[in-house]
Amino acid sequence: MNFKQRLIALCVWFIPIAYAHAAHNWTEQIAAFKPMVVNVETSSEVVFETETKGTSFATGFVVDAERGIIATNRHVTGSSPAYVKINFHDGSFTEARILHYDATHDFGFYQINPAEVDFELQAVKLGAWDKLALGDELLLIGNNDKEEYSIKFGTVANLNVNKGDRHSSYIHTTFDRTGGSSGSPVWNTSGEVIAIHARGTDTSSFELPVDYLIDALEFIRNEKQIQRGEIGVDLELISIGEAIKHFNFPAALRKEIGPSKAGTPKVIQIESMVPRTTGETMLRASDIIYRINEQLIKDALYTFDAVLNQHVGKTVNLDIYRNGENLRLDVPVEDLELKKVRRFVRFGGAVFHDITPQLRRMLYLEADGVYLPHAVAGSSFSRVGLQERNGNSKVVILNINGKQIRNLDDFIAACQTISDGQHTYVVVRDFNLFDSSPTPKSLTVNLKFGPLQQFEWHAAALDWVNVPE
Image 1 (cartoon, rainbow, N blue to C red):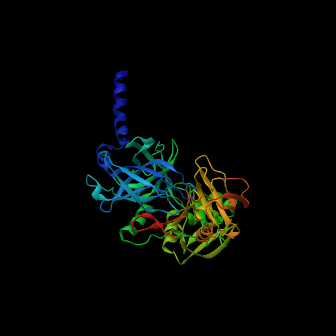
Image 2: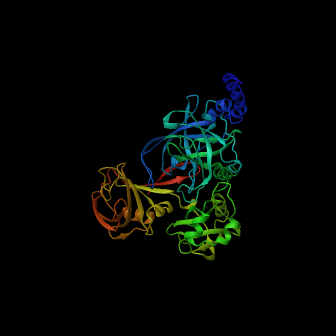
Image 3: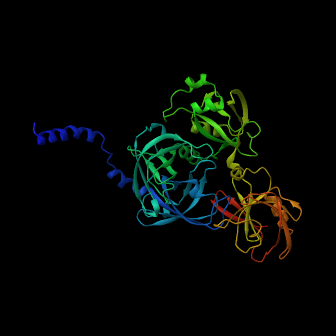
């Protein structure tokens, strides 16, 4: 056989191999999926917690065409008042309102009026996370780097990783994405959305399983109040080997843990506790959670979360290991939904609201008070704390003119005694400083341009309303 014949034979030999590993042909599906994806533009001038003012761009997708429900990330919807513009594939647009944002996981829903849309809305088909396998091909369509309807291809790299959220499970993929992709739908080859893009780098991407969204969407469709179970734990996944060698987890339990579909067998460990929560005095950082309500939990963060949600107002039984010692604890479960910001005040050029569990977690804050996230430059309260480059503050007001401030009601009562131009003092803790000890600050209050205004969330209108004094 001469060289030419050998080359032909070699090429013929490799043809079936190449075909067997050919990438999925997405062409027809991409054309069908695009009308289901929207570009999101948000503008905020009043902000809560650590959110920032300004305009941002992201992605969303229709999950319920009849009700006009659009899914995106929680870090896109935010919790603050905002103007939201939804841009469609045909160049038209409409306004949206925040329908729901999750208190724990990175997803939220906008709602639009379908009657205001010039074409018939189409909803994506929602799939299931547990059908995925390592190496599965995926498609992402989003507002990548503000380029509308960018197409990205990737594969599943890991089925279960935790990326710093309270106790969220993420899918690790190989998408090369940038800013603007937040909220993008992720499809499998069967045409089902199995995740929502949440975060990543230029080379790695992390997607929140769609199961979290489906659970909340069912409550909304059935007109039931969404509940988010809370015991105050931040969780992480550690390998079974690390648990045994470093934290004295019993080696005899390795067999019961068994293999993991996601790869290395792992267990759930408490990374930290949130102050002023039900589990704070019972649980500790480093505790390994072995069972919840008699169910072997292994590395199932999603299951752990689901059990908490089902037991709001009740207790869950945790079977934990603490430095090798087995403990069984009944921990009360409270509803994190009830602790969202539902009221705020504008006064003296600044915004104030009650301290949330999210702030207690971020600042490790046990004290009572009200939180000042932002003050207009040059306003009465602009100098009571160090402002970041984006204008944000991290100030907790503890006292006004000798009156203890435990919550927003105390703050409002104290403000109502202050007159225009009055020389005043406050005691604050500034968490933008290394030393956040309580410190007195003097100020003169200008009420001509910064009068006391109270706002409350109106659930039926999906809007904030000004409450008369």
